[in-house]
Length: 416
Image (cartoon, rainbow, N blue to C red; front, side):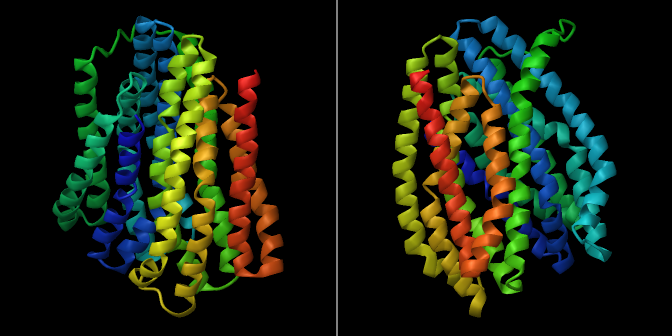
């Protein structure tokens, strides 16, 4: 379960760099436009992943309890909810995206292109939510491979479609290629799910209790993910006080860090379906062992990834194209990122474990503290003591403090 999920996460991180690279062929304004639209894309991902994790947890518990028919009902309702939320996001996005882009400081040609890009993305919002929700049934059943093959093939298709569509529609064509890939993935994954017995049920048999259960499980997940761009904003604002070179270094370092951290998070995501099924079967001891095992394996991988990041840091600084103080800032940050890296499997494994137990609100409260409250206090304080290096120390300290609290929370479940 963990290896295909880790590989899928790694491949998924390549989509944004591919779009930026293709936008670079259209000029500087296109790159700026796609960069401004990144937070908007993250909103779609937050709702997609949040709802998919909720469906995975509920379906997994029902499968563990031997309630296969109930699991299919939950999956059907999750698909209806995904389509409905997608339509709402389209309406809200088409109206609100221009305001968000202008609020970020976009103007002129870059604003016009960013509006085109975001309009196409929000037009296909339902596709993003549906493909993730369809996959939830497969993951809950114990198979993460179809999603990997979708993302792997989709990355190549996205690159090809970018070049085909952007010639006629510019940045809107780049966004359209992403939407087309999602729609193709939706059809492909549904075909796989259908062959494995997951049939879309009768929508006339609407049950409010299933919708309530899905929303209760999904809302904290979505809220937790929506706090991530808040954290990036708070860090960037603090880093900006040290000049544009520092901002450039942090922006590039963030992409490198994601390449190392996302596969680790993908690996521990296997805790969610496996522990959910154990929880549904009433075997809390097995659910706890699943979490501990996943955390142990991911921690070993994180240690290896940290050593690799330290070893590659000098070459990554050269590859970045940054020079002078910006390159120095990048190298310094990557060192601290390597120290913080093993904290992420701890944090996310506990979040997935608690979701499996039916307590998704723990992830939301941890996210509020880690992404919003702690940066407001710790970063300015540490920056005043140690300058820009203090910001990097603050990020690392917050990550490990949150990991320690999460670990204590997870270990308490054994006693419970």
